[in-house]
Image (cartoon, helix red, strand yellow):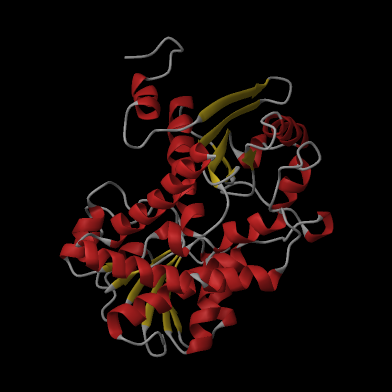
Length: 368
């Protein structure tokens, strides 16, 4: 069944009626001259202008692109709230193959679309977009972060993303084993690209044993060359999650890593990684808890990057950002404590804390 626009009705149901909806605004963007087709979703501006990256991806259908934008924007509201940022959640997706369809003209057209929102949405990098792309977008839109240092930005945000995940791992170790040290722990990392290779460095510096995998052999070889000791590689994620004696599993690639097939065979006692949307569906967090696996909510521990890009709006200072990202350790511990008090999984506890902050902000705005 379709609605009056021809889109599947379940997309509009998600937007207006489901618990996953509640978005303030969804903008469909098109520029035929450049070939731009994009969706900008603003979930909430309760805490401030919506902030979230731009994903450039060859979606199979426009409806799939809309659904992804809605889901990602909602996640950014929770991530920004838990990071203590004065930003709501938003996300944009550009429909197309970035290797084939990305052009300067398309990025400039996209910048004009973001600018038309007058600052309600602040964009940045995501899958398929990079610092150089944001430099182009910024030529048409001043509400653009993730730019190069030469253009007033902070550059690669993966450095602080990895640092935040590392802090989440330390907090998980403190909660589960009574000691934040990761020395001697065995950590499996699925995906050693932009974020994963920085995470390996943090772990090796502390003396952890690391097992890695990646779909790209060159990414694996780069890690093995940089760390000739203390790092081993396995062929794929299926093997990684079954590694004997694994203490921590870090999904750092695509979402949906925790599902009905992977959770039952996980050997790790902790899951803490950089990938977004790790839980394949509602209920997976309970499956993890039932198996005694401690889950550090993804949008909490991977917030270092958004902390960095948000800081660009105030004149970037790396030390200030790193200090904020260090607080991910305390935030993660607070979530574990709330989960224990309320008798719920950590993912649900994080949602409650984020929702409380957004509700308080809305109430304060109404009171004014």
